[in-house]
Amino acid sequence: MKTSAAILTAVGTGLLGLMAHGQIPASDSPNHSTAKVEAVEYLYPEQVTLAPGKTSSVALHFRVAPGFHINSHAPKDEFLIPTALSFPEGSGVRLENASYPAGAEFVLPADPDTKLNVYTGDFTIQTKLVAEAGDHLVKAKLRYQACDKTACMPPKTITVPIDVVGK
Amino acid sequence: MRRNTIVLGITLLVLAVFAWAGWANYEYRKQAAEKMLANAGRGELVAAGSSDTGMTSSPLLGKPAPAFTLQDLSGNKVSLSSYKGKALLINFWATWCGPCKLETPWIVELRNQYAPQGFEVLGIDSENDNLAADDTAGLAKDKAAVADFVRLEHMSYPVLLDGDSLTKPYGDFDAMPASFYVDRNGKVIAAQMGISSKDDMEAKIRTALGATK
Image (cartoon, rainbow over all chains, first blue to last red; front, side, top):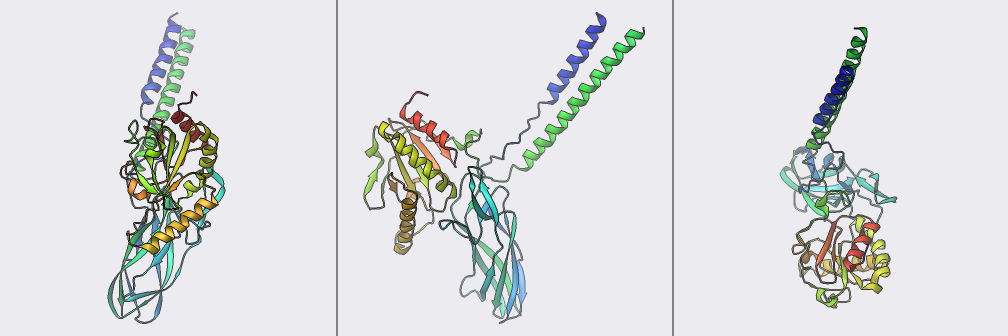
């Protein structure tokens, strides 16, 4: 009898311990924060020095925030807005060419049959720039349209600030 | 004496197993909680149809749907008040919105199925490109894209333009699709930000119609 009581006590104590330790909430569900953040961030370079009047290669690096994707430069649907880089006229720097990375295939959970072509994480646009002599604080623009797995945000244009020194 | 020793040994073993299980469970949950906290600032859009009520909550729930008058693609003025007595789905969408395109065939089917019972859909286009009122070329381009979309998707219900003017009265949402279900008395009975499923939409339509489940 005493033996049974001891075993019962041990089991009970163990169960209580389990229950007590199980109180920390755990969740594998996706983060449902509604905080409004930029879906795309320009990373670098902040400054480049280019030979004036000559075509120079400059790689511009961007990051798509976790949980989001943006259309690639060549989305598969005519209605989708492509990611596009532009340099303002009269900035002292001309964008001669921009080579965009190939997008990755992406499928919405609600539509496994349709493959989208998107950028996620870090991506790089290879540019050919021609700078005039002098210091140019260029405000290039990146237009994109971001979505997550269930909803899309309106198209947006962010400033890509680069200090281009032509010398 | 020997029996007692065996019982004591078993007891200690059971205790040890439970202690280990408790500790392992604690560590697992602690790590999961830390992972969750680390992700807290990601700003991911809310997953529609999830258990998170944030996506289906709206300050408009239980209140009359805000009135509006917008133009359709033919230039006719259409007012919400014209649909008094009908159950409605007010669906905000845009041509550039992939999930909107995905749910549109569902909406077309559901509209055709439930229209005889007094259900209607108002598709409200919100291109959200901040065009100036005098940007006639930009507005014409938008309108042409909307017309193409409507034709390709066989949207048989009224499609209204300039939904951007309604996002504030409808809860200042910033992502699409956004759907508001209105009952026959004009009250918003459900809202959905982001795509859910055809079944979920149908259930909300039936509730708006006052159908028994």
